[in-house]
Picture 1 (cartoon, one colour):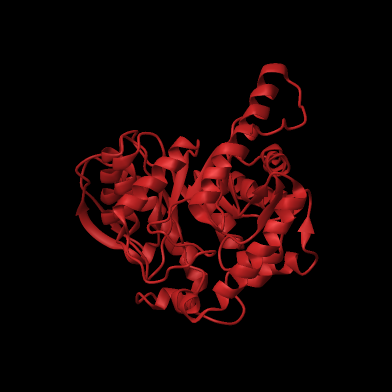
Picture 2 (cartoon, rainbow, N blue to C red):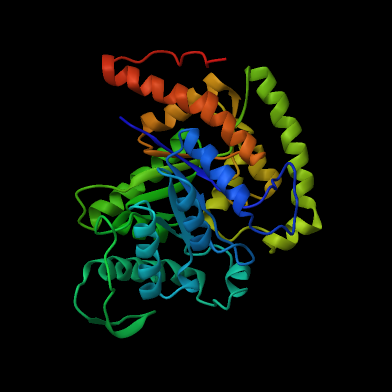
Length: 373
């Protein structure tokens, strides 16, 4: 059994613990950040998207230029780029990166955020649009002769891409927690993304995705991607002290006018994933070995917002719980982004990989070994 690790790139020196709003993408900082992720053993980095944010394609190309191995995951909303154009842009990135491009399709969970860029497709229809979009991406990467399409959301004539991706296709990630997300992601996703929920609820979601894959006639299932915001220290006690200090600062950051202006919207979240996190948080602050749900309540569950709290060994063991459940990819990013990523690469990732290597070599499990000092 193997596991791959994902992080999130920052494009200038700002974080929820040390916010510097109004910054612009900084190539030197991206280079520093990306190289630290690669040196720390991360396999992928998500290049996020927001209506008022940076262009993920340009940032992904910058990451690829500065690294040799790490794979940029382009977050892509179907409303922002026509699928034929996206297919060519992704294939271009794939060639320039030596076959490292990955795409994560964001169907859109907030009417207000979608409307900022002129997208008024109803929320219930957005996954149907994503379904058509992914099918068109795959066909564009496959067809070698001109073809037409007349669908519900897209129409074009006589299109043919000038070149294919390096490996013939590009991995497509789809995420969400709604029935439509499970249906589309189960049928079409190479990867299915989940936010960090307790083990029981995570297993239930994985089973639902697998069932949709079966109903779609697949003989395989999408790889599962789970996301957490770990807070780590040398001991559990120190980690929990750090966690409460961190959350106090994050709370103030999320209450600030600058932060609310960036994220926009108010009231209860529309997306099912955030609703699920808030409902689980209402049942208790800590679940399973180390899953801390309180950050979801404090932040309104805007995006990935649940933490794994504990010593390096405790958090590594918690990650292994999800690997044992069937998670193939684990996304971890902190609140002090770059410094946390360095700590994860130094203290947490090696413990997880060491245990998995031990299991493969011996067929036996052991307690997670102590982190190297």
